[in-house]
Image (cartoon, rainbow, N blue to C red):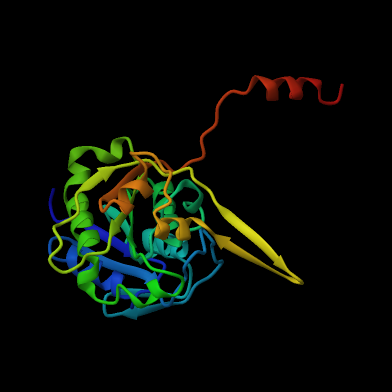
Amino acid sequence: MDEPHVLLTNDDGIDSVGFRALYDALSRFADVTAVAPNGDKSAVGRAMSREVQVETHDLGYAIHGTPADCVVVGLEALCPDVDMVVAGCNRGANLGAYVLGRSGTVSAAVEAAFFDVPAIAVSLYVPGADGEWQEKAKDPLDYRNATAATTYLVDHALGAGVFEQAEYLNVNAPIHHEDDDPAPIEITEPSTLYDMRAERDGERISLTDNIWARMRDGDIPDPEGTDRRAIVEGRVSVSPLTAPHTTQHHEALDALAETYLT
């Protein structure tokens, strides 16, 4: 296809390292318009604002709002002629079915899907103990696996017909280390493992996602073919997904409806 026009957003903020790494990589072959939050809006899901302030930025537009806001504002008001929406690169993986609704990065891709615009959400797996991982992935080169996989998919997925079946792709890449070989791509499904914990201490209750600790310890029961298994073993996980909630016929619910008010 001709030079694709890409709307690039994220939830870490327009000035984050991962965002700039992906912007620079995509700009080598695509027309990229940045429409991203002016600051960190991580883990806000598909939260939506009634009104947002827009500022011009060297890369495009900085939005005082959420990632979902950015997609709506971009597709409706700022750059409605894009071929694809890309969200990322997020510092921190977005793995597992339970994460899809929480992540601002993934939610931006979901929002695009409701506009019938193909989308890719991109995140970087940054291993480390509590707090330790936040000191990593501060160099654009750390994102090389993520940017390489994303540019490949943006360049080829539309022409290959990928989005005739999938509405968006959730991509997670391992962090790149010097002298590493490029990480291969594996097509995956979101893991169904769920291990949230809540612990009460007087008037305070701490909520912990215990999966991260299990990943650090190598305690990963996820089977082959899941996103978490792929990323822990050093592969780029690409999950093809659809956005609308699915439904099916339920005979038991039909029976309840028939006896209502009787």
